Picture 1 (tube, one colour):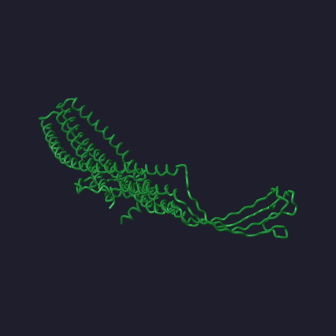
Picture 2 (cartoon, rainbow, N blue to C red):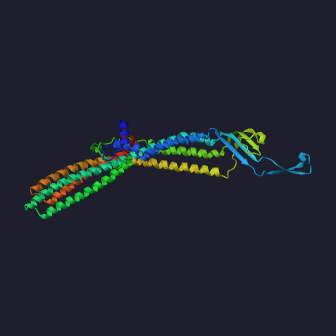
Picture 3 (cartoon, rainbow, N blue to C red):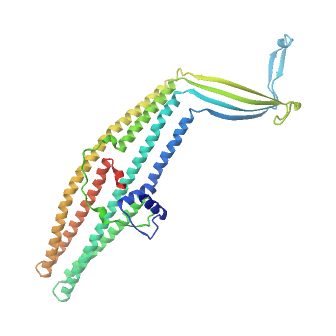
Length: 443
């Protein structure tokens, strides 16, 4: 059903004007199917297979066809001793060759021993695994980015709901004050203060709406979704369910760490490939050719025209033994070794960073849970104070200033609670990431 749903979403492209209910799981799955980063990472995995094939090709026979057509308007002459032709003491100037020469043939080269080829073949599997891990890391980055933006959009929408509610309540107070003013029971300054407050609330509402639009657009961009799509977020997505605080995760299972270790493995193979320049190489060569020569254009010509065709072939072994390269190979090996040692420092630093992320996420989770409970109680008390103050104001026992202050405090308490929930959700994503379990958000 999940796959059918995703295919349906991709097919309709979340068309403009259509209102779509979007859970976090739907958002993440959609991003993994449509975001350019995720697609490019998959293409890199596909491309790694072609790179492996390229390396393997060096161990296979290399066969090529060749052809040549040469016209010699002036044939080079050679000066020889006439003694060989029964004319001692003379010099003979003779021209060897024909005006036209054409050759065609096949050549084959097969590596018999080449240490760099053998090393490349061993590295092929690691190359594939490197791009697979990189693809997994890219997917996790997409998931984290989408999840954080998803919750940021939701909290802004919650703030707008609170402001709308506050605007409605302030409108009711304005109507009461206006009635009192019309009956001479309230001052004009009181009515003006209410009007100013409503104007301020309305201005803040417009600012929040603008922020929602901008953050929604950012979320859709990170998902690879058409910007014009109208989305609705279910309220249950923002519920706080305390995360399971299990034992410390194994840092060495984190994707970031695995990718660096695989990169280290590839650098070791790279060093061995450079060291292969110290080894001799041996290859087999073979060729078969057909040659035509004569005073006329040789193609399709016959011996009657003075053109003769013949074939020849050869098989050989090529041995190359490096003796001295001016210390160039040694310098390359040392450079490769420095790259390995530099990456090993990155690995140590990454382990510390991943451990820091986990402990910070744990601290933030615990603090956020405490803050949420405190703000929930604070919100309840502020609501009670507002209700009592409103009753007292209607009975003439509280001033308008007291009522406005109570409304501000109630709104601030609700905003603080919403912010605390957002902090918890962001910390929850960080904790899930630190445990290497971001993929659980799509299950």
